[in-house]
Each structure stands twice: as structure tokens, then as C-alpha cells.
Amino acid sequence: MEYTGHPIVQAHEMVMPCESPETGILGYIAIHSTRLGPALGGCRMYPYESRERALNDVLRLAKAMSYKAACAGLALGGGKAVIIGDPRRDKTPALWERFGRCVDALNGRYITAEDVGTTVADMAEVAKATKWVAGLTGDPSPYTARGVLAGMRACVARRLGRGDLRGVRVAVQGLGKVGMALAELLHREGAVLVVADVDAERRRRAEERLGARAVAPEEIMEQDVEVFAPCAMGGVLDEVAAERLRAPVVAGAANNQLSGPEVGWRLQERGILYAPDYVVNAGGLIFCYYEIKGGGEEATLRHVERIAENLQQVFRRAEAEGISTAEAADRLAEACIARGAP
Ligand code: NAI
Image 1 (cartoon, protein in one colour):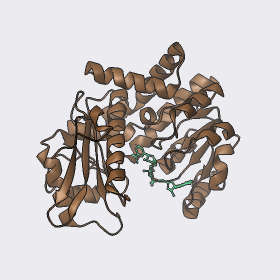
Image 2 (cartoon, protein in one colour):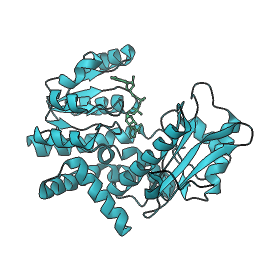
Image 3 (spheres, protein in one colour):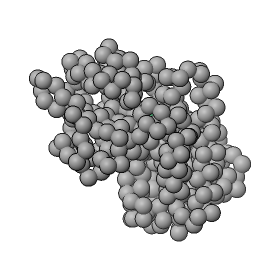
Image 4 (cartoon, helix red, strand yellow):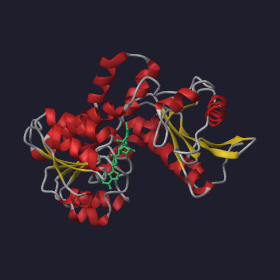
């Protein structure tokens, strides 16, 4: 069964419920577009309050994957899966087998991978039922961090006229898989780190190993720094944050950083250069692409470094058309998808 009646399904190629005869609905798989290639996107597991919420999320996330792949210059479409459940309690081999069979039924139009709430080990279970799984050879996060670093260098060069990150003050929000890897890379480049995490142990580790100064989570956005790097949750840049932010550059890994398009405009008005999230955080997706296609570490890293050029293209378009950088990224992605070539 495919859904067509949902108000935002029109923009998508398809959305399909994953069902289990024993437990009913497990979640959904959505494909936004396969114009550039098979739709690759992770499987999120989350205790959604309702099926409607899960459906909305999968549709939104699938579209974002199309845009991310297009801007990264990858021959990939955009898709996503969500499983309704608590990742700490509800995982069973039977669930992954059922999900794997749903993925398999799409015969390669959708390729799954890990995402929030799912792990490499879960995907190994899924792979018992389908070959359409990526992200099995390791954690994509270090590649995401490398891409953010490349993007940050491009932003600092454009906004501050600086050729490297030595002595540049960077505030990193969130020291998880990407944030900690990014902080380590920044430390090696000679950047001065201010960090925040709700987890005290991670803050302590960054202080001890990277000479970072840790601040309370609610203070990180107002630090007197050159770069703010959001690497925790989405929606951090709302109207209040857009007024309070002191950094002239925002470049970080978190998905959906802007609470709405008006925030992109406000940042621009304030002279803050915003690196659109899905352009700068594409390193993990690039890693998955080369895992499927082959090409090895060198080709992967070369492609990840190209994130800097992709961003320059976004900035040029924003300037030429008098639009926000977020809007410019959307237009570039839409043009790629419309012409069917990355
Ligand atoms: P993670 O779950 O490993 O790390 C998130 C970190 O943020 C944790 O250390 C957590 O304690 C911290 N945190 C949570 N709330 C916070 C708050 N209010 N203030 C400060 N710190 C807080 O997640 P991961 O994988 O590092 O991803 C980070 C972000 O990047 C997420 O938004 C994710 O969707 C996005 N992303 C990740 C990719 C990857 O390759 N892992 C790829 C593309 C995007």
C-alpha cells in the first residue's frame, strides 16, 4: 500500500507503511526523489506520539536527503525510514527482519542506513533480510566532522578573510560523535575552543584533552567567538538566538538548525554567514555513497573536501540573487533535481 492523500505527499514519489502481522504498523518508508539515483537515507527509531507525527517526520526527512545529496554532487536520491518505538526497549531481531523485508520489497529504490536511535549493529540485523543497506563498515560521523571542518574553513575565509583556523575562536555546541571529532580536528588546526554539552564527562574530556573552555549549555550561543558550530539538536537557531548570537559565522553539523526561513534572513541582515546545514554536514552521506559505490578512503575524503566548494557556490548564488544562504542552497538543490543531474 502507498499513501497519496497526505497533504505533503504530492512532492514525494511514494510513502509506504511498514507493517507486521503480529504488531501492526512498525513505521514508514518515504522516497522523495530518485531522479539523481537510488534514494539513500537512514532509518530513525523514535517513540513518536502518533502515526501522523511519524509520517510527517519521514516525509520531511526524505526531502532533506534529496536536497543534501543534490548539493553534495552525489548520484543519489532522497529517502528515509522511521520506526515507531523506543530504541532502548523495543529493538528485536524480528523487528529488524520485518523492516529489512520492507526495504527489500522496494528492490533498491530505497537504501537504508543508521540514523538517530539506530546503530551499525541494528543495520547488520537488517542486512540479513536485504542487501539494500549502507553504513555497515563503520561510523560516518568522523567524515561528517571532516566536512564541517572544510566548510568552516571556507566560511572563515569568506567572512573574515582568514586563510586558516589558527587562533580562530570556535564555540562547539554538543560533544557527541560529530562534535567531539570536530573539536579534535579544530584543536589540531590551532583553533581556540569553547564547548558545551549536557554531559559533564564529555565537557571534562574536551577540557583535559583539547584545552577547551567549557561553559553551561545555555551560554554557548552568546560566546564572544568567530564561529558558532551547532552539533547537538535541530531548531537551535530561532528568532531569539538570531538576535543573541555574537559569532559572525555559523557552521555546524546539526540537522534543521533554522527554526524557520525568516531566521536565515535575520542572520543575513545581521551580517552572520550561515553555512546551510545540509550542505555542510554531507560528509556522512558521502561516506555511505562510496561504501556502496566503492572508491575507497582517498576518493571519499576528496569528495568530502569538496563541501568547501559547494558552499562557495551557495554563497555566490545568495549574493547574486539577494537571498539568504539557506534559500540559495534550496534553489541549487531544486535545480539539480529538476535537471536530473547532480
Ligand atoms: P550525538 O547524539 O552523538 O551527539 C549529540 C551531543 O549533543 C551529545 O553529546 C549530547 O549530550 C549533546 N547535547 C544534547 N543536547 C544538548 C544541549 N542542549 N546543549 C549542548 N549539548 C547537547 O549526535 P551526532 O551523531 O554527533 O550528531 C549531532 C548532530 O549532527 C545531530 O543533529 C545529527 O542529526 C547531525 N548529523 C549527524 C551526522 C553524523 O554523521 N553523525 C550526519 C549529519 C548530521
